[in-house]
Amino acid sequence: ATPTSIMVGTGRAAQLGVLFRKGDALQRVRDCKVVAFDKTGTLTKGQPELTDLEVSKGFDADHVLTLAASVEATSEHPIAQAILRAAKGKGLSVPKATGFEALAGFGVRATVEGHEVLIGADRLMTGEGLELLGLEAQAESLGQQGRTPLFIAVDGVVAAVLGVADPVKPSAREAVRALHDLGLQVAMITGDNKHTAGVIAQELGIDRVVAEVLPDGKVAALEALRDEVGAVAFVGDGINDAPALASADVGIAIGSGTDVAIEAADVVLMSDDVRGVVNAVAISQQVIRNIG
Ligand code: ADP
Ligand code: MG
Image 1 (tube, helix red, strand yellow):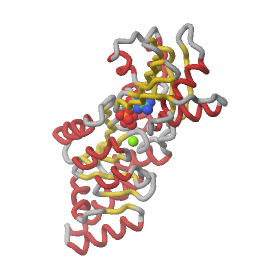
Image 2: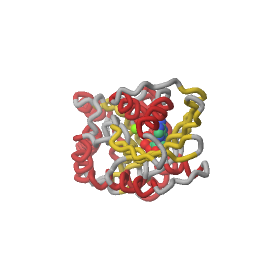
Image 3: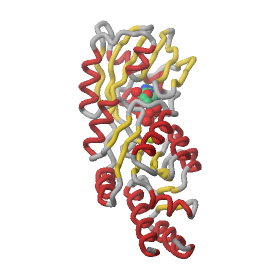
Image 4: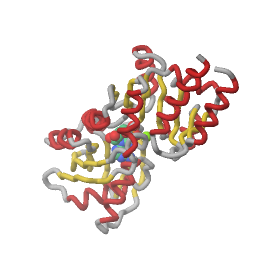
């Protein structure tokens, strides 16, 4: 493409709220064969709600929710917000936790009123050698409904399974369809549960899913995708997404996302509407086509 056509292309994109931070990104978008999306906050609204709470024998639901909220008060994960809102909604008073620790990609832990509390994915519990006490069936059924299952353990005993629902953005399904029409494959790369991710991917018409990856696993997943399909654009919003945004052929950040993600990206969408990705691809294809 000529410098003039690139200027026209980036200008047209900017009018649509798609900011190209580097001119050559417009040409690199044109070469992409696959667009990989982060899930939480990118394809979904990133404002989950607590929908389910089933306790093990001998545990009280309000007490478990109080302990969970106490631990999550220090976490910045969207799941934490869901648990805190649920506890507030029930009028529970949340005690202060000590010794908070975030286990990236797994969950969180802290001490609350002398109790050791652990919250996170099934792999966190099994990694600690804890029995799921039959709650794994409930967890699987939550996943099949597209909800994220979480376990909470109190003093080394699994006390409850929680379900969190994060609705997809209205723009996501349309964006996936339009990317297909433009000849690209669409993938999802997420740390979330594989059943949950699979259901959401199917709902959106996504071709490939990589689930239950740890934060640095996103880069490895991108490299595998690049080897198999070709140049890859990655779309994300979180701190966890920064390495993948930097290593993708084109990194596209959601403008409402974290500063770390925006700084790592080649392209920034000014709204959280993922159809901005479609505009970026369509404009890049037009600019290159015009030059022949
Ligand atoms: P993603 O944002 O892509 O879903 P993360 O790596 O942030 O991936 O989280 C992966 C999984 O780790 C979550 O689905 C959840 O099971 C668990 N997890 C992470 N942070 C928390 C938290 N604050 N509370 C409970 N579970 C958590
Ligand atoms: Mg995210």
